[in-house]
Length: 421
Ligand code: LLP
Image (tube, rainbow, N blue to C red; front, top):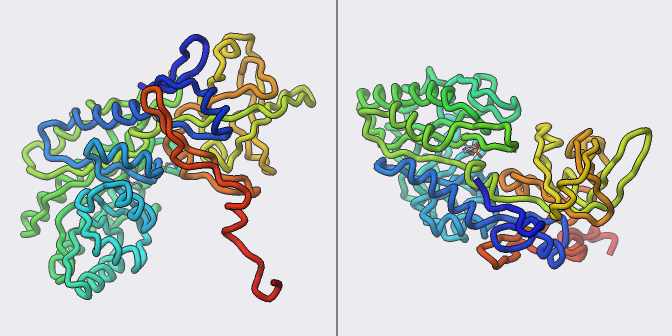
């Protein structure tokens, strides 16, 4: 469910015609819908009502401070994976006691910043990371609340590049080492082992593989408690899939919550959830302008002003995003196959090959749907292309939450070597 619809033939985000944003802010531009973000957060929160839970929004999905602060207002915490995300979440108003810190490669500086801020939990992914955290915590006179991320050796299905729960993946500690690692953690002065963490992948359409992983986690929680380690929290990561096209039918948040209730029956723990895509994915679109339509060798190339540097998912994962013309008349015209491509000098700068599209012409505008998660955050300035602007809509108002950098802004980040000036 989202709030992007045609009204009087023009595609709107809530009460704002997207054409208006394209005209005033330009393209490429990401547009997020507050009502959709709120709806997704509330659907999930309602599904868990009656349990002790923290929804730690996975900032990596869409890290704009405008989006994080919108969710923080609803009570969301944050799942962060870098010092930068930690700083952004704090700046956006997420209380430190609602922040969990995941990731395999936390640096000394990042651990120090998170300890000083007093975050809720460190999701530790290796023994050396725990040793480092223990050392820093002792130095600072603090105790770090930790969960080990355990690797459950479960295949979640979905795209190989976003699956994380297998033995060959770099994530987490080995299942068979968990008991021993927790015992070591319990003996360290700067460490308080308080939770178990798991995350098996992303865009998971069926909750059954999650059930297998979570059952293993519950078994581990029971064993650790028998061992005398007071586990109070279970962090179940993110991963619930979303529909990218009408044919997609992911399990719903309520099926997900029901499965979790079944799995944890009889075990009193606080749940931590780290949803990213489920909250932000369908709450954002990317607007692009048609620059040229080029007919060549029997193909039609629709060349846009946005490319793989703006929306990388098609080039990285072969992802397909639905496309809606901002003008509905174009959506109803005759369809023919076109290659939708960007301006970047790479063959993979292609959104889709032979996509049936209504005829488009220069300066028509289109929206790539479901681009709210892993869209703007994965963008780069490749080819010295300024990062796309970001805008958030609420009702009939909109606010630019990341202006498009100017060429001067881009140039100001660099300089000639001292010896040439
Ligand atoms: N927690 C951890 C530890 C994660 O690694 C992730 C995502 C999440 C939570 C949030 O997962 P979600 O609820 O969004 O599925 N760029 C890829 C997706 C990468 C996912 C990375 N980890 C894509 O565009 O499909």
